[in-house]
Amino acid sequence: MNNELITAALAEYIIEARLEDIPDDVINEAHRTLLNWVAVAVGGCKHQSVEIILQTMPAANRNASIFGRAEKTDALNAALANGVSSHVFDFDDTHLATAIHPAGPVLSAIMPLVENGNIDGGELIHSLILGVDITCRLGLAVSPDHYDVGWHISGTTGIFGAAAAASRLLQNSEKQTRWAFGLAATQSSGMREMFGSMCKSFHIGNAAKNGLMSAMLAKNGFTSSEQGIEAKRGWANVTSSNHDLSLATNGLGKKFLIMDNSYKPYACGVVVHPGIDGCVQLKNEHDLSPNEIERVDLRVNPLVLELTGKKRPMTGLEGKFSIYHACAVALQHGKGGEKEFSDTAVNDPLTQTLRDKVHAEVDVSIAASAMAIHITTKDGRSLSKEIKQVVGSLENPLGDSALDNKTRDLCQPILGKEKTETLIETCRNMTFLRDSSKVVRTATL
Image (tube, rainbow, N blue to C red; front, side, top):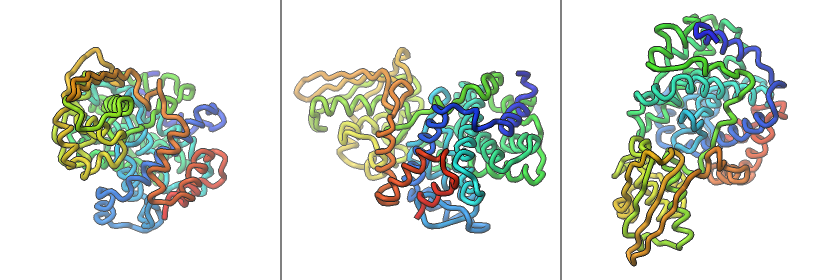
């Protein structure tokens, strides 16, 4: 594919793709992606960051729902709030090859259209597949330089997926979709400096809001460059000094990158998941109590300390980026859910004591999905565990029953048992529903 035609090729694909060409296994994976997103969006709906958004942003009208809540706002602010809510626990889906969380921007953008647009379940699922594909393809095209220099790739590429999915549901023309991509390109943003603050999840919400706005503006004739992705001063060249745009179109319509999506068992950055996994296993296998532990030594991939090297996090959000905190709560509680990364957990005296006993050393031979854990006990025992493929990786994926239970854990305290079970059934059968808005009604109060 000629790099001069990337924006046009992606726009043509979005408009002309057909649901009947999507293999059954891809559709099934999209159902899983939808369920995971709904679970984390409902689970995060009461976080302070969502409260601040709803207090701050005036609503133009009130016809769009916030998942897990009774309030309504306008479509753009709903996309923003749901995007923040779905990412604030850092519990959402991950395309491991790029570290992108693709569902948040895409589904948060299109849910206001689903709620008000008489859209069937198959079209919702198809637009999700297309939006994830665009997001991850562009991510592959600019990786790893784009991320390494400091861009938060979930926000910077997620806006394109959001614009793509929304353009599909709005029935934009090919030209209008090229404009939507151009509008997305000029709004693409998000910096890794913000990790550990509310601003990280804001990147997801902003990508959803601005992706939806891009598609809506283009629908009404708002023009942009029609080569916004590949032009000399377009998105790819401005945000990455080394890229391969052929990766954005290779296998387009034949290979669906939602199949490379993964789902987190722990509510934090994926690079610390092997540490949690190993510490939980050692705790359970040896019936370890925190006061038995003298020292914890880790051998980690370099990315672990680059992303999660905070020794003394002060807030729950910072705790998600602390390998020290992650291992401490795993050894203390035997799990790593959203409660283990709360402000309360971060400031718990026993957790803080354990945290200071954790030591991490970089080992370039350790893969990003692996970790070596060694625990020395006060009575002189030496306990070791090497995690080669963490739970939630493509090689060791989170199964359907585990995903259902994750949904129950996140949603039942907010929606109740009956609604949560209906929500699971609705997401798993979305393609066959005539009215896709059932998912919104079931996931709100």
